[in-house]
Image 1: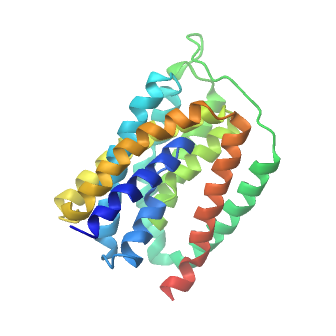
Image 2 (image 1 turned 90 degrees about the vertical axis):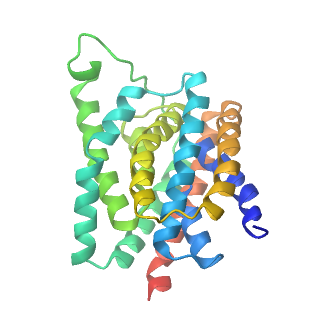
Length: 260
């Protein structure tokens, strides 16, 4: 367990940063486990998912105490994830996922630069009983459903990145305050990560020796992240989020060279 104990601070650090900006840390945990610890990809994904399940549940509790979760939007962003994942997995049989990951990374890099330069525009998305489904406008509902399908497709193709799509849509298309978008994002990921982690658990892909120390660190890190977020201005938090997007983009861009 000597080397595995190193995973406690690693899980803490990744969960702190990812929960602070409302993203899952799987995009960093998976390559770390594969490249640094030599684990097979299926084990790395399973360990990452169970870690992020506990981390996002922990972060959801923290954000709910701050009242920074839009539950209606969060649920809508999960509705079409499964059909999207199915399409994404199917597309990997027709197209080269490595090259598509590179293109997605380039697009994400451009969006991240745009977010750094763009000033925050706050828009309240409060439920209105006079509106139809869930008290949300038709525009918001359609955007959320489209984003849900798109994020599922991205996750199905690349094994990660679905939460990135959700948060981009909330910030850029719905103009939600970045703090609310972060809380809503981790709430949505808590739902989907739990289902995915259970599936990997039944397949025996989760190795306790690696998962447990990561979970211990991640649970505490996911409590610290939202607390740090509370003390950071929206524009500053968005810039931090943009930097994380750039790191994710770089990882996506180099996938074709790693898999070549």
